[in-house]
Image (cartoon, rainbow, N blue to C red; front, side, top):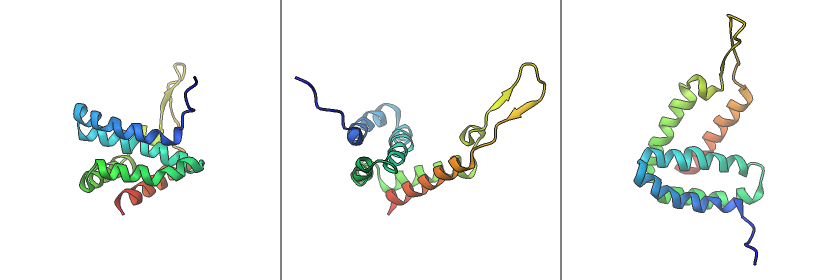
Length: 132
């Protein structure tokens, strides 16, 4: 007997269930980072190109709003906005410090402005979904 195919667009259910254990074991900040900062961002990205993911997005957002209080969500988003978009470090911008062992000059790879704009728009959409 074969198992039913994995429905990746429903993976959010398991991720929400895992969040309770993460919160209990590692704390609120890690739980927020896991579910919103990682999983929801990836899910919204997938939903932009896949109708199955897009159809599950409202239920996922509703469950996140059930798991975390409005104040917890707002605080997390404010901190994320400040740290990643308003005062990002070089790693957040995708800047890598590459040096050639034969060259004394440092080369810097500049951030991709299109990718950065897409991330900022995704963040704005997530803030809107979670706070309205």
